Structure formats: structure tokens, C-alpha cells
Length: 407
Image (cartoon, one colour):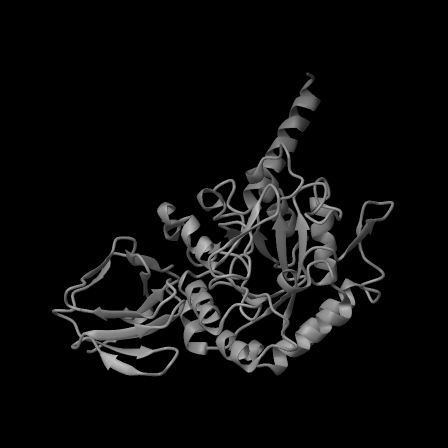
């Protein structure tokens, strides 16, 4: 190799290394878990610009925006074909005004617009994926005004997930528009071990299904009910991998999609305690007042959005009774008592007997030495830890308490 070519190669490699070193995800987009809405659970592939506009309107009118919900996310099937230059197009039949106009409308409501793609050649519904078009697609999303990208994992045979998700992360960063990056490979490749610096959240489980404790088969894979998702990774202690800017995602919520009020309340409370992104999946335009009150319970949302960013731990696992504890900022704690069973659960919690220690944070409570007041975040009832807590928890329901130390 001559000296000129050698020098040129060195310069090229130096520039390449520099570019790789500067590539990163956007900071500050998910200091707390994302909150929003996604089209898939209710609408599947039946998406169009009119419905998305109406959903943005409903998010404002129902008070969800004021409760903290920010993103209106279009899932699979918005796609048209790629043009001659390879640029992805929207479906002209379903989005005749174009994605930029839709983003402008959503932004005018004080909300943000999310979109969907896939690391493979095709999406899960067979639309064009982003494989080989990552930088081109990221630039297109930026031009459209997109704020959130859910990136799926269908049609990815022989693709390395770390490389694929890193490539799209770098493409988004190069495009220059801050876009929250939601990794969706269902936990198949243990993303909690490698995705902290790549995405803002990663799916820890397979897809959700609107049932309490079931699995719905789709041939080679299953959708999972609330308890199935709650349990599937419990032995891995995933909470150690999550925190501000990088969250375990237990999938979009099914609140308002056919479960009972108690099950919806439990589902919402658990997702909040686990610091999962709170992404609603119901039809916001016609939800019941009961559903609206569950989704906009600001006290439960505050647990999810707590600045300490600590995912809850399963403290007691005793048959139908599960108790989850979540350390909060300012020395507070959240306690969730879950009745998994089909009968009323009568339970007395002896505070002094049940000492608390969280190895992850190093925090502990000795109720013999410390007194806390508590407030029930669903009923408003109040008490303190000087007396035993006597509960009668209905089937599939929860009691959620916020404990504040007495100074």
C-alpha cells in the first residue's frame, strides 16, 4: 500500500472511530417512564389519520394529558411502500394528509407523536421494515416531526440484536431530532443486560393480552395475561437493570379492554410500581368514567414517575398474597398488597414483625424504631404503622399505600 493510501485509510478509520464514539441515545427523554397511548391493543392494523387526531383530542378532553400522558403512538400498518430512492412512504389511503401534517396536529395539542418500525426486512404485519434503511428512515422520521420510535423484532433471522438496535440508535442520533427509542424484542435476547445505553426502554416480556391469568396462543408464540407477565421474569430480578433513562417495559396496558374493574386497578397499580412505561391501549374516545379514573389516578402515577426511579421489589410471595415494596424519594415508600386469588383475602400485616431491607438501594425500615403514616391511594383512607394493618382484599384487587416517615 502506498503512503498516500495508507494515510487516507488512517484518516478514514480515525473519523469512523470518532463518529462511533460520539453516537449515543438522546438524554433527558425518559428520566421517568414514558406515558402515552398506542394504537395496537385496540385497533391492530386499522389505523388512519382521523382516528389518531381523535385520539389526541380525547387525550386532552379526558384529562389524560394533564395527568402526564404525552405520546400518541401509531403502531404497525401505517406504512406505504418505499419510493424509487428507498424513502418510506405513508399509506395514502389511511394518511392522505401525510405524517408531517399529523405530527403538527398532535403537537398543537401539547402532545407528541410516536411511530413504529422493525429491525427486519418487514414488520410483524408484513409492512416494510427498516433493515438496510436505518439512517434513511431516521432522517425521514425527524423530517416528519416524530418524537418516539417503537422498534420491533420480526423477520430478523440471523440478525444480531445488539448491532441492529445500536445501528438504529446511531441513526436517530445522527438525524438530530430527539426521539425516544423503545426497544421491542420481547426480552428474547436479554436486553436488560446490554440496552441501557442503546434504548430508553426495552420490552422484558412477550405481548400482553387483556385477561387476568391466561395465555392466548398464536401458533408459535403466546400473548400473556397480567399475572403471566408479572411472573415470567421474577427470578431474574430485573429491577437492578432499570433506572432513569432506561426502563423495563412490561408492555402496553390493557386497562379498559375487557377485564374487571378490580383487575384493571391491579394492572395499572402494578405497572406503576414496576416503573413500566404507562402506555394506554384502549379507545380513549369512549372509555368509561371508571376506566378514566383508573388511568388518571395521579397518586398512582406519582409512584411510576417518582424521581428516585427505583422499580418495586416483590417482598412477600405467599400463594394468593403478593406484597410489593417500592422505595421512593424523600424517605417515603409504597406498599402494594395484591390478591391474586378468586376469593376475598383477609390479611393482617404486622409492621414491626416485617422488617424491610432493600439490597439494591441499601434502604431499610425497622418499624420498631420508625413510625410511618400511610394513605391508601385508591380509597383515601389513612393510618399509621403503630397499629397492625387489617385488610380484606377483594378478588384480583390491590391495596396501595404510600408511607411517609414521621419526623
